[in-house]
Image (cartoon, rainbow, N blue to C red; front, side, top):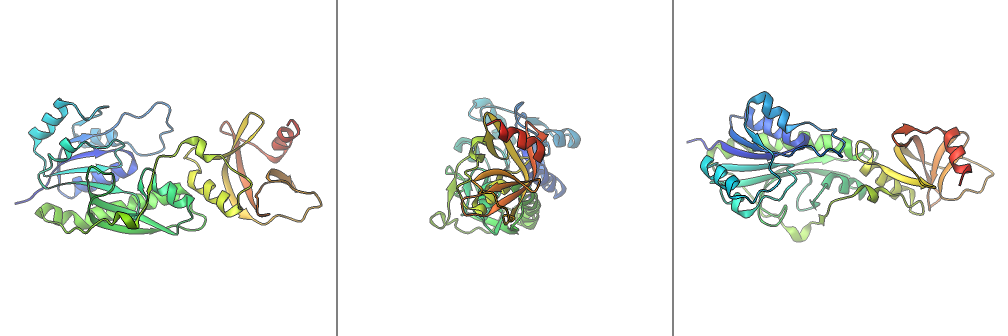
Length: 305
């Protein structure tokens, strides 16, 4: 007997890729639960609702998962599995318990490290050299259930979180495809998720991208990489103007007779971010309100402060 009926909670690119893998892997998906796109959010990722339209899958976008109507709808379907693929709400226990075999979540880290929100961004911010994708059993506590499978992804020294995220999305598909045969048989291996060996992090806000130029250059560079566009970006202020570093690289300060203070400086007609340890970032793309700022423009802004 095949156990291949699943309800999928999904959003974002990982949601699209993993839902596609389930469908192509022979799973029946009578219902998808997703989100409406937020009007103030920059939507740079793939759309689960559009995939559902193309594949003719019923989908809903509830703002509250605790309604009796939704619980009854899922109960009537009687799914073998519930899957969560980058769905943004915590799924309540009364819904998790409706999966006849298991409720499984795809998380963008090598659990138990980086439990919680935006794990790829946190990993890059902390200068990690690897992360990954982990399929695990869902419990009340976030990202705490047994690990079913995971795949490692390297993080290069100059990789941005966006670059790493795309690799993690591909790894998530590999992880899922590897375990689909076991899931269809209704019996899959699992191992403990040793939380005491890991870490938990909360959500990040755009304001968390503010640069402290007194920090070492490596730390500032990791912040740049962690929130580089299409994320909100690492930023600094000149007066009331917020300047976002869209592209940068670690560099050594060029020889100059001018005494340099920390922050944005123009040296030899190029823009540098001088850091607290005497090293710097060479800024190759600086933006103000989405528009490119050149060295001559920055010179004018600096002269006004």
